[in-house]
Image (cartoon, rainbow, N blue to C red; front, side, top):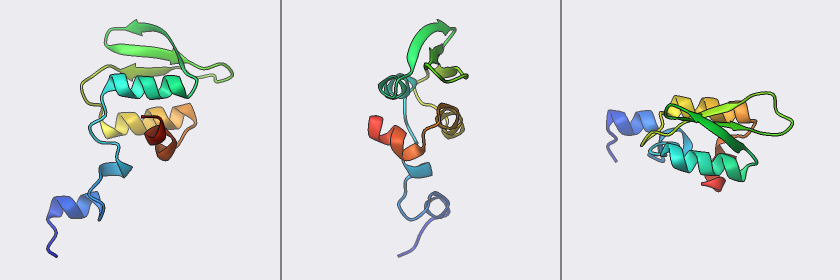
Amino acid sequence: MIQTKKAKALGSSGLNQGGLSNIPGKEAAKAFEKAGWQAIGQVGSHLVTVKTGVRVNLSIPQHKELAIGVLRKLIGLSGMNVDELLKLL
């Protein structure tokens, strides 16, 4: 089987970063809410969420599609991993 450069870069599964591609901000916000994060307001196009016992706030962009780096940063700040977030979507 011949793979394109893009397929090689994405890995054998063809999913970018474990399935993190094409996730809208609203879906990401719902997933974080299922994990216990509560929306406290919005600043511009970013939903600000907090969680009891956690010192950081998550600022989730409400864009049509979130960049993979943004999602990975939000996942890291929340204390979750990629698989946990994907299960909540």
